[in-house]
Length: 486
Ligand SMILES: *Cc1c(COP(=O)(O)O)cnc(C)c1O
Image (tube, rainbow, N blue to C red):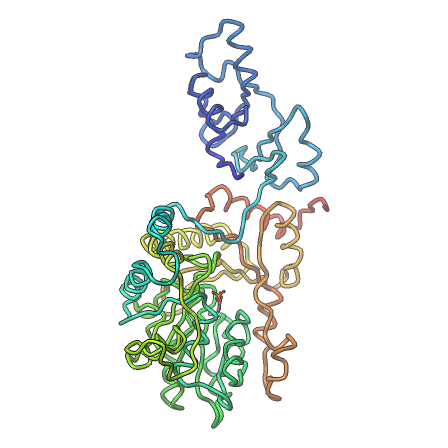
């Protein structure tokens, strides 16, 4: 069970009755007494019981009874320090930053954990899913699928959208619907999630790996141009970590060589390029609603098409290739890539709050940038050109004297219960894709970025204090302050 920090806190100006209510509500037998964010005392239900026996009234101030001397640890305490501090008598330890502010707490079942990403499902998700179950519409028929597609299309301002079971099948579906197949070459960035390359291979086409631009971390349009051959059929720009690829250059390239453009927007819902939503610049685009993405349906995806005819073909292919006018008549080999009504119900509720999620991601980026911007050897993500970054994961690159410290930073964060993620491994390094490397390819940027970068906690649920404690660890690394080994 994850206990929210605020359920453990009481302001020092409150009375004992208020503290008793907090303790009753959190069922942990304890609360931390705060002056602003600073911890000034600890109060247990036993302390209040003893006070009552001594005829102290419940209307008395908590400061009268709380323990002013209590055990606490710095928020950089390692797991082993926390372990050795907890005991039969000290079941809760507040974790404090250098200003003595409460960052987190540790107890036997909660050491502290700040995840890279996590779903936030406290809108209408439960109500809509309950509706599916109560009405029996749990499969892929039901009102939420259509509603999710319509709401989604309206949000990104596309003419239509097709909900599917995940982002990977959305990629496969777009490639099949656009007629990409054996012998065709498809330009993709070297630094992306493997699904981008896999979908190309599913249709028998050849992925042509292209190095990335060092600023956007997306496919380098000039290097893509150099990789074009007479077999080139399509390009899949991936808007990595929320920053859009240079769609002006990519569209020019596509026009020059008659290439199809399929945008992989799995990590970029809400990202704008020249004020326009990514996913509306090419012949097709895909989105993912996996649990760690900007909005989630558990598993899920969306495919968007520019042409109405291709949209209709994709719609049919999603449903076994069955003719919509003639049941059980199959004119093509299709797939079952349908999204369930339950997934879509979650999606409708998530989409109701999409602006909140993106505002939160941008707020997180702002907080990190303020604190980390002063460290000279960290390259922060930002906005290159007329773009609006949705900052799916705030991904930093260690440069200069810190360039070799990525693994040390990962270790320091892990020791402190902070999850961070190394960026993707370049595709050209991995066995299934090695054989598609062209002899004159140069992947120096992707290799460098991959070795020196990591994504910091970017969950919409993260608090200001948690963000600050992540920055504390990075500052300590920059100053080469030693931390205890696990
Ligand atoms: C998540 C992701 C996908 C695949 O999405 P799934 O829904 O997990 O299948 C594809 N491309 C990129 C860049 C992704 O990050």
